[in-house]
Length: 100
Image (cartoon, rainbow, N blue to C red; front, side, top):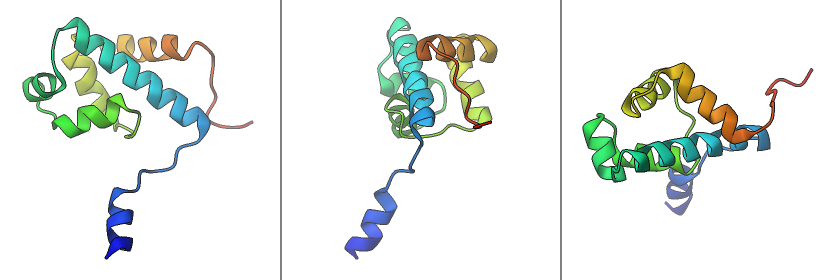
């Protein structure tokens, strides 16, 4: 039984580069949510997210799908391209996920 519980709560393993991107996403969500003066609960409720999903995004524990990213951007009153630009700015360096 303990084995099943551990598997259910295991977080996916991300590379250092992926974790850097997810952390930047989390920073952007936190900053924009605070600019809007919303708690996680209110931000999630008003934008049809589960609070736990917002928390996982903010902690870099969840890799969002394209539509979730788009919804997050809209929830922050932004275009997706503006939202992605903030993530890139937070990272502060060019990162290639594909090693060439």
